[in-house]
Amino acid sequence: MKMPSKLGMSGAEAVELYVSSLPKAERLALLANLQKKTAQQIRLEFRDIRAPFAAWMRRARAAVGLTQQSVSNQVGLGRPAYVNYEAGKQSCTFEKFLHLCVVFGCDPVEALREIIR
Image 1 (cartoon, one colour):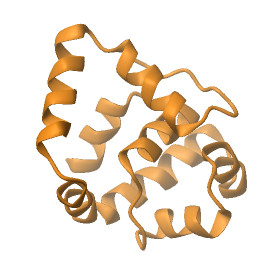
Image 2: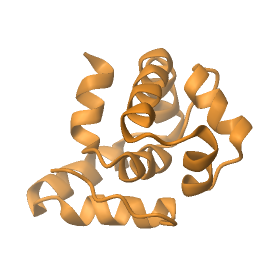
Image 3: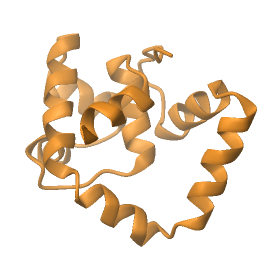
């Protein structure tokens, strides 16, 4: 599924759009899995993939021809925080990741596959 790009969409709206687009069984499985994990566990998992995540962000942004400033504005970040994401110096939340997928017009599942391969 290709995510529609919606300018000015909040992170919560991006998450809601993505989750609501999933088939019911996948939606329930995703929610059950997230409920089993603490926020700390999720942060640790994302920390392990900072470098490939940063590389994916740079490629995805370049593919849609956006500037760092433009993307940071659309996802509600300051440019320095966004630059830290692209440099692999800072982790982002799952909600921000989903919002980035909306901005980049990509499917979050496919993006994760690309990041972890």
